[in-house]
Image (cartoon, rainbow over all chains, first blue to last red):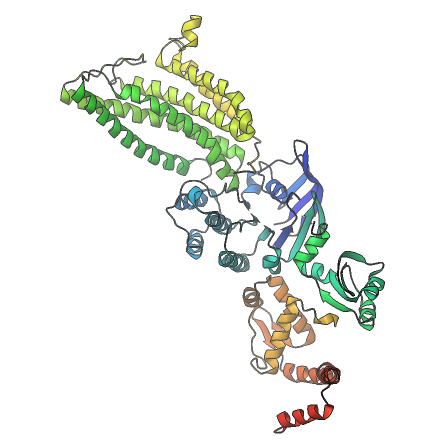
Amino acid sequence: MRVEVEDLVLRYGDVTALDGMSFSLEGGKIYGLLGRNGSGKTSLMSVLAAFRKQTAGRVSVGGRPVFENGEAVRDIALIRDTGEAVTIGTAEDALYFAEWLRPSWDSEYAESLMELFKLPRKKNVKEMSKGQRSAMGVVVGLASRAPLTMFDESYLGMDAPSRQAFYDALLADYIAHPRTIILSTHLIEEVSGLFEEVVIIHEGKVLVHEESEALLSRGVSVTGQAAHVDTFTAGLRVLGERQLGPTKSAMVYGELDAARRRKAVEAGLELGPINMQDLFIHLTGGSS
Amino acid sequence: MRGFPTRLLAANALITAMLWAGFVAVVAIVAVGIGLFGTLGRSVWEPASQFVRFYALFFGIALVREWMPLYLAHGRTRRLFGLHGGITIALFAPFLAVLAALAYLVERGAYALADVPQNLDRRHLFTDPLQVHLVLAEYSLQYLAWIAAGALVGAAFYRWEGGGLLVIPLGVVIVALGEAATGDALPLIGERLGLALPQIPAVAALGAALLGAALTWMIVRDVPVRNRA
Amino acid sequence: MFDDRSPIYRQIADRIKAEILSEALKADEQVMSTNQYAAFYRINPATAAKAFQHLVDEGVLYKKRGIGMFVSPDARDMLRARRRETFFAEMVDPMIAEAKAIGIPLRDVVTRIEELGGDT
């Protein structure tokens, strides 16, 4: 399901949440949507799911504008921690109505997920723990089998085993029923392996949109004697530096060709990878 | 599911019928209590049925606060919700009226067995609960207005939070107009202004409900799903 | 060395190569699918597919359309030949450098090698 966003603006009163954002997703992949708090992740997904009407700009999913477009929105599912997709009576009720409202709902699969997460069927969803409610969202989001499925921090309150179960279920179901999935998360290290592409947004704009592997290959840490590190990194984009006595480690962002790498080795510098979380932190302005 | 809110109506009808049965049982106990410790000479259901109006009000609120976000979260449009919401209000009000009429009849039967008169205190379109068509007409119209008022107030609070307070007077007007369905002059306001609309109670109540529904639609037609729970 | 940074797809490729060298995977045997690898490593299937594509490009695996990936008949010989080429540079030279740095006489190293490898 192709997703196109063009000059998208969303304002809440005086606050500009999305500030002329543009990007397009080819679809059929798992995308990571990363951004700091207040960067506009939830706003973006809410507009994509027609939860909100944009202030300006264009959004299309599968080539169709989404707001109040029945043909388009039936193919879209957004699960947020506000729980609007699940908080209606008991867990059983929530599934009963999801089955009725969702065109490609898979009841059997929903039941198996309920068991996977050990969710009480007769319990009122509003009275569930935060983790259980998040798991309900995951059940409904996955069993909806919507061609565009979005999870906005759908792990909140879930313990580590449940999160792992979520990631495994998501991956298995994506393999069995390929579709476009967008995940927003702050637990980057846990899920970054699932992403085929990553979109990093910052202050309402797209900062990076890359294939995950390409993004990772762009980040290099350079460690060695401070003076040598400085000489080597001169002219490169340095995201951050840390120093321990005479040793310095710099994070460099950009392609390093073979000649440059050889130079580093000759200068006795160690080159290493940077994980996605560190790259994200430094690309979005450091750990302040 | 396309055109008709089957499960929305079915689920609510079921729950409401169960609550109704429980409520009727409570009313029966009260009636028995009055009979034992005092003199039972009038309908107890008549005053008790006032609660049903508030149930209708909350049903209208829940329709917007709970059901609308559910529709939107499951890939349905505000338009479809509007259509289903309209159908739901139009069918749910008579359904509540049927339950109210049934309660009168149950009471009538029980009173007959105990040889107690089922006198009515308030003014109605009907003079005897056996005039079932008039009972249904009056209560349907009244509940229609109450549900519509609930939907309107619910929509205003959903969209503007505290700003919804400003809409409450409108809700009161709709409910007051709905009371015209009893065949009375406009209660409170009407008596004071000397207005009398006994000939057109249905028009007033129906108009009020339609007004409430229309205003609700104006509020929700492009309402954002709230970012906070 | 820079190439030590191992993206996940290199890890997968290394694993498969190791299995071929140890003959856990034999010539013309089918390897697990990209999806099975993806699920096992909790990674995107596209990333796993990339690992397989590398191996196909290197001639270690071959693809049967619609069936899956298989070990090339000459994969093991090829991998062994390639490992032999880099054996001294990657294994022996660093060992000698390390021995020198920490003061182990080379004679001791040779003795150890002869002890362990005496039977071959």
